[in-house]
Length: 535
Image (cartoon, rainbow, N blue to C red):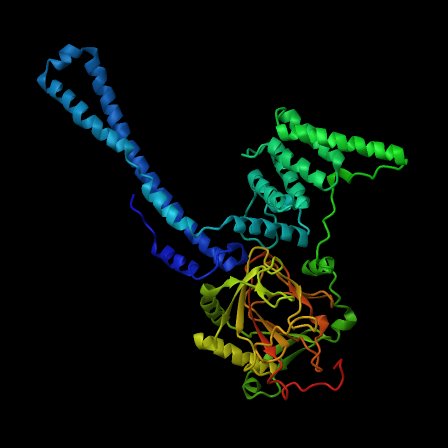
């Protein structure tokens, strides 16, 4: 089979040559893997056809020789008495059988292997697999999904059925274990046992699962259950060397614990009930509030507050262009004032922006508050690119439109940023403006702090993906073609700390957004300063 790389894949390679891999951080880039896999399947089918054709020839030759040798072996001398038979026997053994040997030795897989080798250099890495596993665990935690629900693919808004095998669940548990995340190790290894106990066939064995599970529960402080699981492991594999050592170690610890209780005359700490463990506390103080809002819980939109929210036609301080065609404006929150505009971008404009941005997408970064250096972070999972007005007229039109809507100047604003969120894509609670305790991260721009944020939703999201404000108790859900706008700074120039916000993990769907950050300089007469610190 000849080496075959489709024109589609040549283009795909060209795109990948311009971007950092990290497929799990962008669903937009992961779609390219679908086409790569489709091409590999086609290449594999061609190999199978060639292999089947070869085997068909060999089978035909074998049947022919079987009939001939049955006849000749019955009366060898009589058969060879005919000179033509004698000649053909010599010819077969000298020419035909060596030709068959060449056919058998012919490597039909060479083309497929070559094609696979070319593509493998652009495949996801171990980092991608770990990132994808962490994304599923993030969704599991944020949206309170148990492993059984995820393994059955029972997620809201899904068009396609997707289930996880016992081996898939084992891969999740192993990824968590390798990251030192014993909480999720336990959850996923227990799911593997559940599926194996139900009779599912898998490469992973119960002994392997119990090996991971027993040590993970020990790390979570459940010594009694660790001992029980280790004994169960040894009943399946008595020669398991590590389990034998662990058993002796756990028994010794348990004995020391008993002796300590007796000597101190204290009661033993109760073990975790039915193997249920608390999720470890992490670095984010508002984790519970943030995740509740992502689920649509705890939204503080009281009836009294709701009465203060209105819809109107917005003409941008009588901007001539908007007097003719005003935008529909809807209040999302009263204080600080957050508004949504409708029909800001058409479907055609959205697709064009995505087309321009996609080849330039790179892992989104955050600025280290101590060093001021841009770096990737686990709390921001997306890819982004920055678009110049000169790249396409649609970018210039969108910038001008945002200027008309906000009444602010785009001359000192940052470039249009386009972002695509990956598996469980998120951006945990953060401020858009620079705080007093940080280095002046915008000093190099010479345009002051970020005064306002204009966020365009370029896709609907089937589940998850809300923009939430933990301090306010507000949640804003993506609607394709709409945009939300808020001021990050008070009129005094001080940061409005109530605007700390987050992009919730995308549970189901593909989330595209674009945003424009307006800066202070150039807005002095468009948004005059207030007279007090809290204006």
